[in-house]
Image 1: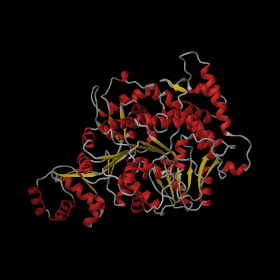
Image 2: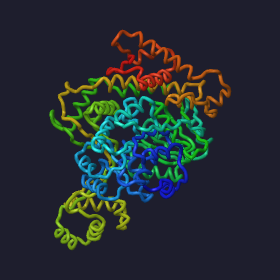
Image 3: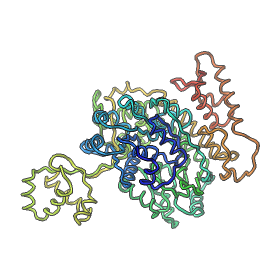
Image 4: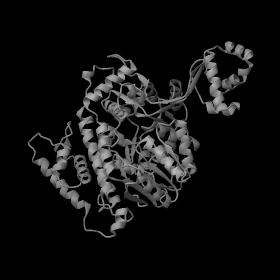
Length: 639
């Protein structure tokens, strides 16, 4: 086995590890199941990339975001490390070749989405691979208590059946004790070694600014703090409007959201990473897997949906350890907006069934058909055709996804594909007759193979560089060849895919489980309450609030957040005292219930005095400790 210190220096140029990285790597290399709870900026990806190079075989990395796969694979290839990613934007032939390289070649890391696991092609090939490790990134997605539950993550446990001797590594930045227990159970981890990093970020100054005029407050922060930064906004339109406003004020800014094509997103991201753009204004589609150490500020223009999301996004500041700022801009409208978002995210059950029926009518799939089919799906176009609000349609699709009916992927960048209609002899005669096209056809044949037997993905920009034509002229020539019936031509497009997991049912047979609707809505309301509490808090250290939310015991005040700086003196209140009292009250209320009865979380919250954040945290701890349990309807009762 290669020396991991030498690998670290050779490929990453680091002479030392970040906290807990070495311990996690050693655990993985000893072939133990391992869980790493490392905060944002803690270097999670290195905990599986480094072991991949230290041992023979391929490491399978499961991650939910295609953009994150591409970013990590590109970064690894730049370091001379063989890595591939398999996702829905690739052709069947490209996927086949990539899997072959994992079986017979020297690929060290294979990135896949969880949906890929149950495909027949992957199942057949994975059993031929020498698999050294299975790494589950963003492992909190396996837990319904996690803020970003993905049903497809429940399929990962199938790999345990196929690869029983292969160790698993689960990594995440935002896991409470209850989420940790779900990770162990759903991934079938065998007595895993757990490493929990501190959620303290002493170099980040957490600040909340109450502001009716958020644009003015944002400008003050950006002008007062030197260096690059991120501004998070809730909507695509808001990112564009804020970026325009910042540019009008002389600040080098750009916007980023999932509605942009992959190449344009990549170009914007690169410009920010290189420092050509000082401020990137983005939705939460931006930031996963991006390693920019010198981010001096992260500003949230609107309140995130949960403290988990907020901590992960704010934690992208100050990865180099230098003083940085995480600023939340807040006013009373944010609480109202949070309530409206939850209402929109959980439309009435009858509306969900109507959306289900409309989707199959839109796709022209009859009852009993459609199982395992895949369609391009523009949800805005669909919503407009059936006179639905796009947010209502999206929320309904996500609830149908939670119930196993379908999956809507992220926007995928599907490259241009071409295939010759003619035989080689017919093409040769064309080149002789059409000298104006001969040069371009010769370049196409030189750059790409397999064009006479299948569709091949081509890159117009690369063809332009190699031919001397402009990119626009390349597109014109491809279109001309298509009209002449020389080639079949599928232009580049960016579109999400809708994957149907089950055949179409009669609408009255569509069932929405209470756990995916009533209970999840209740949990989102509690998370929103905790987020509001954080924003309105003026008495307790913000770092303490965050760290206790993530189950750290008795953390010390940071001394640098806005609350600490405004108080500068202790008031004798200890958060641990509140936890002891609330624990006692919760257990007492549940003990008074009749035998076999449970109580909803909402009712419990009303019966127990205390801050919603503290009550929610204690409920999670009691569940994780097995002292209470949750029923299928979401209600709580004593164990």
